[in-house]
Amino acid sequence: MESAVWEKVKDHPCYSEEAHHYYARMHVAVAPACNIQCNYCNRKYDCANESRPGVVSEKLTPDQAVRKVIAVANDVPQLSVLGIAGPGDACYDWNRTRTTFARVAKEIPDLKLCISTNGLALPDHVAELCDMNVDHVTITINMVDPEVGAEIHPWIFYKHRRYTGVEAARILHERQMLGLEMLTARGILIKINSVMIPGVNDEHLVEVNKWVKERGAFLHNVMPLISDPKHGTHYGLIGRRGPKAMELKALQDRLAGGATLMRHCRQCRADAVGLLGEDRGQDFTLDHIADEVTYDASKRNAYREVVARERGDHVVAKSEALETVKATGSGRSLLVAVASKGGGRVNEHFGHVREFQIYEASPRGISLVGHRKIEQYCLGGWGEDSALEGALAALDGIEVVLCAKIGECPKARLTAAGIRAIDDYGYEHIETAIGTIYAAEFGGGSLAATA
Image (cartoon, rainbow, N blue to C red; front, side, top):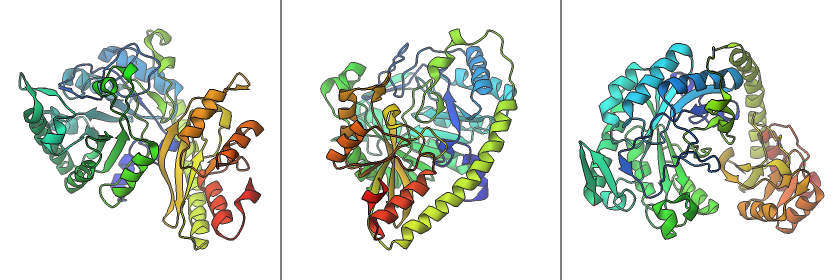
């Protein structure tokens, strides 16, 4: 990666898989208005128990957002990025977006600023985004064929008029491509989000990947459709299912060689706070924040020094692990689910896991290829059988589970399901543990001996 690009992404948890182990993001819900309807979306407010885009517990004014950002920056030293991702569209609700960014930049000038948009209003604001030093923009692009788009987006609102069907999808497509080209011409890094909708655009996303790569997109993030009738979305209500984990991985694997894929996305709420994979948003609702807050940079500055040292160690560990994998001479791959609280280490108890990070080890390297959310198994010292059954289902296709500790009962259940549970590498770097296990499995040793 070019050094100038690395400087832009090295502390951005969404644009760098490596950075997401160390740095946090927050979204402020200042942009509720939206100019398109998507069949997978239902923008819900005052909803603390759903983790998906478009959901928030409270909408904010720009003044409230600045107060919240300062409170989070003082308490969460990992914070490096402020994003506006709705709950509507950041470019359509532009005055709120612009005002919020201007005020935050004045208070905390070193925070990276980024937006997420459907792209319809994006071309109108590219110049202002550049002026505000916004150098990361996410565009949701689910199609490049309006016929496909008409099945996903029933209407748009453009130039004071509502459009429907194929005409609406054609306008949206043209505006998305224009915005993407305008941004890349100005050196802004673009991440494309695409929702994988089985039976609608799953095959078509191969073409989407080609189009966005040709137009300079930095990353392509293919996300699974979240479809549950209780969410009230059109797809949920008609029974359109989301993809299975291995179906999503298969599509992502097909896209290898096209636009670079992001595989560590968590499909964050529009008011998310914290590291990817955790959400501390409920700790920072307005009733938890003082009326007057003053920014204190000391915690964030100290944390950066710690991360700089840890990253150096991690780079060495990853390099050594890769050599270990290559030295086996095996052409096999190994899927490993890792229980981690962050920092790139195996440092979570199996019973406390709410999501596994999924790694694939092969002669090409050791790479994060996704995550699987589960219900926490251990509550108050007792394991819930239903939660364990859910975890087993979520671990479909996984051969090894790495965790800091695991009880005998869940370990036995995993073994019966053909999954090896290993807790001998607690607090080791993830790649070090996986490299050792891979060598034992395919280098002439025995993986059973490491369990």
